[in-house]
Image (tube, rainbow, N blue to C red; front, side, top):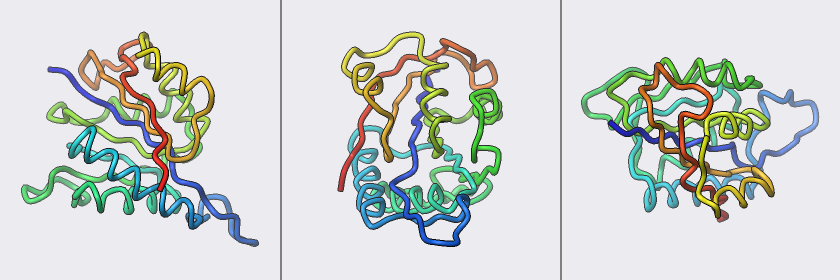
Length: 178
């Protein structure tokens, strides 16, 4: 069974005075870009089976806005009326590559398409770690920068529990703008 992993960096955040990093909201541009990301996912990836989101406010906001155009209504836990569960995982905030791989290895085997909504440098280092091969255009784009709302789409060649360095192919990298 082939699997697909979408690694979405959160949208552009604001820097209100006195607000700690974990609680920063999205900026106006971030709101527009998050919605554009959802539209891009709808057209190019489809509904995920499982979504893992950092506990930070800006990642939760990014997914909430992206999920709208995508039509994703996932809820915590598995619900037969939902396309899949949504996990808010505090380990994703400020995570190392190893921690992100651990989180992904815990995905249920029934998951064909997973989305991870996180932060840099974690998103970039995770994609670099997993992608043994890459589409030339995707590789060139990600080398330039992994901007806010950057979306890496990886084809994963092993079960989630066996995810390791070089076990994926970077198929696409885009940064939708609203």
